[in-house]
Amino acid sequence: MEQIKKPRGTLDILPEQTAAWQYIEKTIRKKCLEYGFGEIRFPTFEATELFSRGVGDTTDVVQKEMYTFKDRDDRSLSLRPEGTACVVRSMLENGLYAGAMPLKLYYLTNFFRYEKPQAGRSREFFQFGTELFGSESPAADATVISLAYSVFKELGLKDVVLHINSVGCPKCRPLYREALVNYLSGYTDKLCPTCLERLGKNPLRVLDCKSPVCSEIAKNAPKTTQHLCEDCEQHLKALTDILDAAEIPYVIDSGIVRGLDYYTGTVFEFIDERIGAQSTVCGGGRYDGLVAQLGGPQMSGVGFGMGITRLIACLEQEGLLKSVDTAPDIYLAPADKEVYTKVFTLCEQLRGMGIKAETDLCSRSIKAQMKYADKIHARFTAVIGGNEAETGVVTVKNMQDGGRAEVKLSAADIAEAIK
Ligand code: ATP
Ligand code: MG
Image (cartoon, rainbow, N blue to C red; front, top):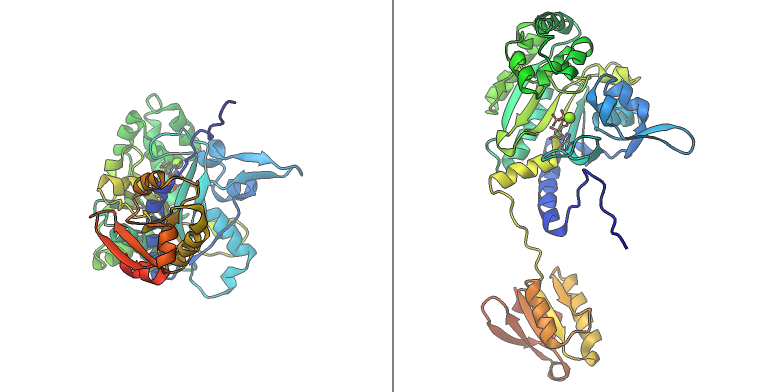
């Protein structure tokens, strides 16, 4: 019969790779604990309206990339394309904003976007994300940036570059927008069709366009940083002062605008050019209007999303992906049927002591068992038959150096011998 293949743009993550994923996840969770961010988990699908209102009707994500479907009751639902709207929804629904503020949350989960699959871009992907609610202080921006930076540092990554910008607030953004539209209107014959559309709806997004012609035009466009109001300018200055003091390197980059509608003020990306075209490993910023827009109180927020596969690409690039040792410590080979249950029990006792122990599950001959032990890279082996059962002594063999040791046939003695 014909085999079924996984859907386009999805990933199978196999045991030899999950060791690296677990190592990264462990590092992330450790850092979140140190920074006081609590983990939040939310549904895989939400009301479609959460994203059209929260992420923005004019964004690529909502217009082209969502997996939207009707359930049997004719409700429109969507697989989560991002986490911020979900976290805000959950925070409001569960009244978390009534507790201690600021509220610091993180998630480590999968998201879904109907995009063109390529290196660094899949249709189901994985993100580490954080959200910090209830602080307008630049120190809040610095905290989430520092958390992301500390994860890179802990993993040994030195060449991921932090780019910072401010996209302005409702006071100054309209003025900037006007200046930008004026400038871009001189290039309507050259801009790509998507950017022509953006010009009317969300001209800032033109600065984010990957087409060579558009990015050339964007180079000379008016800069957000030249159009900030005093508050936004001071905020950016205070943030960079904190980063300087904390010795977190950054570049000011007016090309950073972010793809989602909800950003206000600070926006940032961590970029590693060496992993290819999809070089943004982590992107985030401040979203002071989003909570109110989703029906909550006026409450500021700042956060980021970090792509795990891109993070792995950075680690691979620098040869930092440690191979985690999953090989068994010992393989116990039963020589005949009579001793099998004894060997099985011994194996269980060793596992109970934290030792990776394996035994035969396929009724193999001793020769075939030894071949298998070799294949799974068992560090030690021991053959147990009637003789061993009778004398209560077993020979433990070191597979690396061929050394042998005679020990009592007990879990404690075997454990001692392979320490
Ligand atoms: P991009 O510029 O790559 O399209 P984005 O602006 O759409 O990214 P965000 O929504 O801010 O990205 O998501 C944050 C991070 O999540 C990205 O920087 C990236 O590392 C990762 N990410 C986003 N979309 C994908 C995807 N389709 N496949 C893999 N990782 C992704
Ligand atoms: Mg995108």
